[in-house]
Structure formats: C-alpha cells, structure tokens
Image 1 (spheres, rainbow, N blue to C red):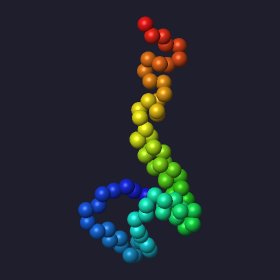
Image 2: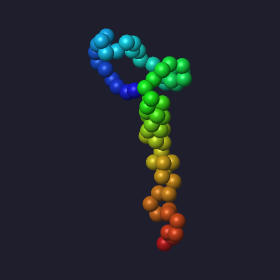
Image 3: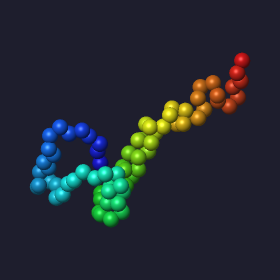
Image 4: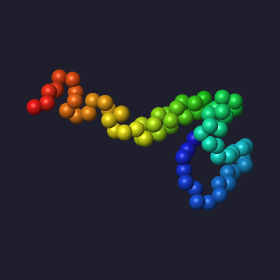
Length: 76
C-alpha cells in the first residue's frame, strides 16, 4: 500500500502481478474485508491511517502536555 504521484501510466509485469488497480480508501477498506491479502496488510493499513491522523492533527493534540505544562511545573 503506497501513496504516490505517478506522472506516467503504471504497467506492472504480468509475470509478477495478477491484478492491479487504484482503490479509494473506502474501496480498500471493503477489499481488506473481502479479498485475500498478505498477512501484514491489515496492520500496514492501520499504521498508514494512524500516521495520516497524527500528521493532520494539531501539534498539541498529539502531545497534550506541551513544554511548560508537565505535572509538577508551576508558572512563575
């Protein structure tokens, strides 16, 4: 599973790839439930979703205890 910008047509080697297509996220979610995938595909997709969520979250949403707000610190 990859996210990429490809300027030319993708032409996989038929000896190596039986089928290929580009799937939207909802299509991929459905395919993961219905089609056989490699054993780590579900885990890889979960990591991708977690990374994307973390990347799109505001910095303090990922780290609620920003510098200067840790337990035990007082403001002067």
